Length: 201
Length: 201
DNA sequence: AAGCTACTTGACCGGTCGGTAAACTGTCAA
DNA sequence: TTGACAGTTTACCGACCGGTCAAGTAGCTT
Image (cartoon, rainbow over all chains, first blue to last red):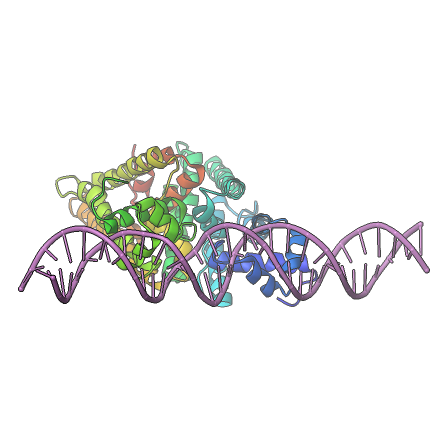
């Protein structure tokens, strides 16, 4: 944590890792500051509140997810159904990375916060809903493309199926986190494709 | 909350509704006691800690889930695939009930706590893992029965499929909670059956 | 009446929470 | 040289946290 440039950047980095691994309520402003190597008084020079830092951290994480997962998974150069496989395989890789770094399967930052704060922090809830909508939109576009090239039958409800794919991913991440075993995700791409009525065999 | 008999029972009832709707960290011992109509000093006569009350509340909720969902859904008098449909429809009903009572879609108590406390409260994590295992076992048994009577092809991996059904349910509940809309669950029983390679049409 | 037990109560503990205020430091431009 | 300004630091705020404790009260047994 000592390599980042500014205090603000270090704060954001600390928030991302600490809140992702231990949750919003369990990480205090003091701990965030210690981890970032600053004094608590400085915190409020950069962010008006803990909630604001969390919101900013969520925003950064969305950008990183897009770069590390969306861009490589939803590449137009890859056949559509293969994109869905890639998405789930990349999720597996990221959970493995997280466990190597922290010792714990962290799950999905957005899913975690959705359940912890969804009913009481409206801005955070909205931000998460936005990311969920983006994932669903990417899935839907992929499904439509698969239908267009004949890899999927025409009758499929792409919107409902895309939502089901997100739900399945979040649920699998929950189980993996609860068992602290990233390999729960292994091979789940084929299970996900069943939601699209694709048979492996 | 005034109709329950003993202080202990009222405490458990308060814990179930408050922690389910707002999470573990956001509900303090003081608030639990106020809601149950007792003074904080009494709390520790019944439970050695807040964590112990939560564990006891989780245990009661498991019993209720079994009675309100497992028993009617996994009834042997119902064809196996219809049991799975019933399970998802009953989940929808319960989320509707919760929203009528509290104004919020509460999601799954176990899923909520799994993500909030899974990495730091080992006993709670274990209890949740136990319930997850029980759900999976019920699904698996149902799937095996469906195969036995020819409603499903023989080749299906019942264990992996059962886990996928749980994951899908938990993910759908997360999305419903995030959108505060219980009707996200409407019709999801057919989507779930796709995981078992069952076509509606 | 005595004594035990289950339960209740209110005062209190040290510690932490998110957040504030004011003084201070260094840098850079006018 | 002065002033403005970003950033840092220390001390502090009231509120609340989970948990403790000793005293008291009611009901039941003997």
